Amino acid sequence: MKSLSGVGLGWRRQLAHYIDTTEGLGFVEVLAEHLHPKGPLPVPLVRLRERGVPVVLHAVSLGLGSAEPPEPRRLDTLAHLAERLGAVCVSEHLAFVRAGGVESGHLLPLPRTEEMLDVLAENVRRAEAALPVPLALENIASLFEWPSPAFSEARWLEGVLSRTKALLLLDVANLHANALNHGTDAAAVLAAVPRERLAYVHVAGGVKHGGLYHDTHAHAVPEGPLALLEALAARVGPVPALLERDDHYPPPDILTAELESLREALARGEARWRQARAA
Image 1 (cartoon, one colour):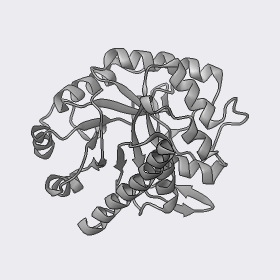
Image 2 (cartoon, rainbow, N blue to C red):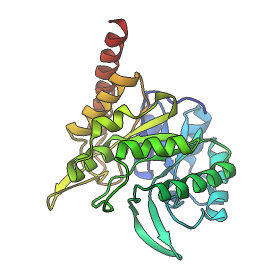
Image 3 (cartoon, rainbow, N blue to C red):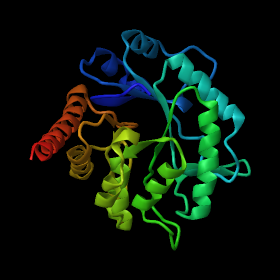
């Protein structure tokens, strides 16, 4: 996989002009479900490819956590879009989204069991065989957990990576949400991440409501995810990080400030990493 670097932004039509006119973006991420499978690509995306800006194709509907294997039609669509975009990789979620043709409408958590690891490994293998670029798997935020998990979230991610060849898309905003909602040991998850398998990092905002933290992608990024991003960079060194924004798009100056907050968190972490290496 071509390495990503720097700070990126999720491409949305509402942000296309900002992305087109902003200097210093390391890469962009495009939602597969927002693109027509056979229609022309949006002109701003064509310009990004012509400029050589690295693009990641991000999907939400493949359903790697289903007992049913990924649908060949969905895999074909992802493969075709990845080739048209010149994507460096495809990313998807460690989640359940459908069964028997019924859509959940949400990214639902998976039971952290040996049986589920077996299902994931086979589904990931099928997806990797169909895609022309590497596959990265993303941890999700959830409002509930299955009872009596066999693994902690850290050991679960280790199991996924040990049974597949996939890369990891670590979402520190989702990790922050699970730490608040379920008591997930965020430090243990960060410690379990092998740098050589880390494709990139997601950062996003959220809000507390009804006693739970909701990963909304529509609010300012709080200190929690930024602290986790800094801690990750302090452990493994420079990592590519991408800001997700899906609603309530802020003015350009506020968006620029949010991107800068990611850069500052990464810089602090990298400084700690270099200091530790020099000690």
